[in-house]
Length: 142
Image (cartoon, rainbow, N blue to C red; front, side, top):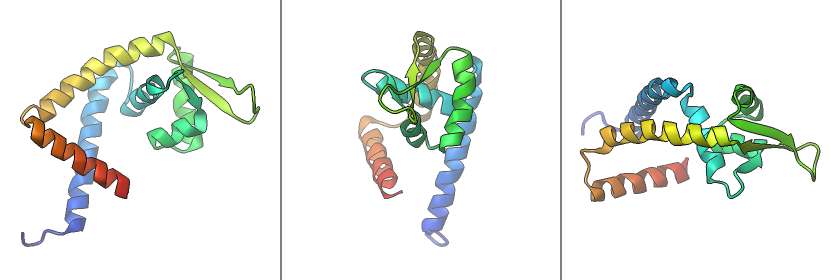
């Protein structure tokens, strides 16, 4: 392909990322969430005790320590998460998913699943699997 190179591919992927975030944020705003809020709920729900260190949560959702703190404060005020100090180390703060956060995740996951079906509905199982493998490989390289 003339004019096609890795930089063009990277630019296309970043444009896709921005477009997807815009669509997800628009849909999730119905629930009073943004994509990053949703990811926080999703990451916490995947933990066995639905609790993790704030700094680990920040890394999982791609934020700095101060960025995740700014994100968590309003989530705590509306009861989606709880923050507490660690019993073992006063310098460590923990974040836990509340029952309200679980309900919000369940409700908003329907919205995310609907958009995913719209986006990937035209792909068969093999194509979805290959796309997922390619994205996993790229994520590992990043």
